Image (cartoon, rainbow, N blue to C red):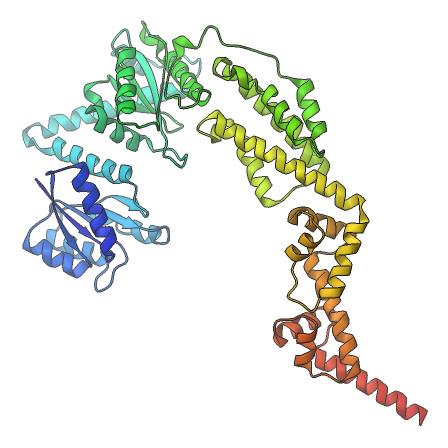
Length: 527
């Protein structure tokens, strides 16, 4: 049983990590807890620990100081514990300074189970590799050879139709024939993708060490895990194990059976394409390229329907827009479509509808632009229906935006009513949301229309109205400056003075004094 020490000044984090580890690895670790570095150092001196998981920022003694003490006690070349750093985003640069103290890895808060377990698995694998000192030198030589082989094969993943080098051909000749190439991704519930090492750790907890089941374990340039198996059944079994554990995030695509080592790159490309096909059917997690080559429906890009969709935007035909969108993407045929059709339609939707909308009507709100950038790539989404719902929402939002822009620009009555409302209510705590609601216009549309109508932003226009009325009150010389500020709607006299100087060039008091002097001079002339 390995000895593990968890150090964090937050009790819930200490106990939460302990609970996660003990549930996943019952009886594998003897776990002790400490609330700061000083307490941890005392525990460590009483009993050496194999693994230390420590926070960075703690009272009494922080994590970096603790690691310095442990390193000093171990001495040069001394064997110390495997250290894992806990840090937040703000501590990341700070955490990196601890790398020289034999830190194995770091965990970014909030901590994900998969990342924690992946690191523990990695540490465990390293220990197992070091258990037999008599084989250490041979293992190191084998590890170097394996890394060289992996690097050469990974180089082939990057190449297209390029003749392999003699060294790569040598590595290919060692592949078991026949073989099948599979590509794996694993997605969290929030749609973010696991790193390859995390995917490997997650899969190995399902099936055992991958190197015992697969001939090659590689990582491609996009960060996908690439496995070379002896048959399709190796991958089907993995998919079945994931399904039995309800791990819907694991996606697998496999290429056709390769009977020649030279087909390695082709098998990889086929597996990548098969993996992309998991995008189409809801909840699809396993795709075999061999089943995708025949029977897929192919259609030309529906140019006329895309033109109609563009024409409909900015009308009151929301229901028809949704219906036409479904027709464009052939929703009824979706499970049987050739993926290239969906990709081509998505590209044409960007170029011939969305780009054209923004060219004609300008940029919408920040939220709309974020949606626009997201739907620009189908594969920003885990499944087609996620993409489709976002695209539909974007189109309806853009439709409303265009209606609002057209309405605001063509119907001056709305803007006249808005200006009248400002004139009547400038002394209140007024903002643009209140005025846009008063005239029943969307906030974003109102902002664009107001600036187009007045030539000024809402904030500047309101400032000018308030200062105009303030100047009238200052000329009467009946109200103190603080009273003038409150009477025209400013929250503080300081804000009033700042805005007055910004627009008039002088402070309110100077303006009043100037008026009094001018009046006095006029009275003297008449006398």
